[in-house]
Image (tube, rainbow, N blue to C red; front, side, top):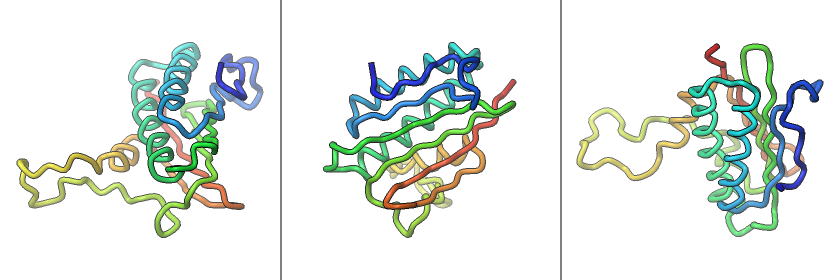
Length: 157
């Protein structure tokens, strides 16, 4: 069991928490948390498409935290909280790693910009593009040496 587990039953959480975990900054823990988050969202009755979209965003976000913000800082933790709000999910990701460049989340420009050749497709750079295409109201802040990323995902139903 992962540390700081919250009940996955929204009826037991007056603040709408569907999922909450604090995990070590390690890709293995990210995978494990991803599986548990998906299970919690399925158990809450979310549509498969919504679960898949949130899984993409969480995977990109958490892997970026491990790879960039907390690289060489594996003793640090990442906290993920997913709350259900009427027709959306509110997601919060916190870590005490390095701040985002220039103090803000990347714009998420498509890595295959205008005039790019298909045979020169970049191998990476799609993460923030995908995140920004899928979510609404993405906000990054840094308070007391902690990165805080909030976003809203509009549910399909």
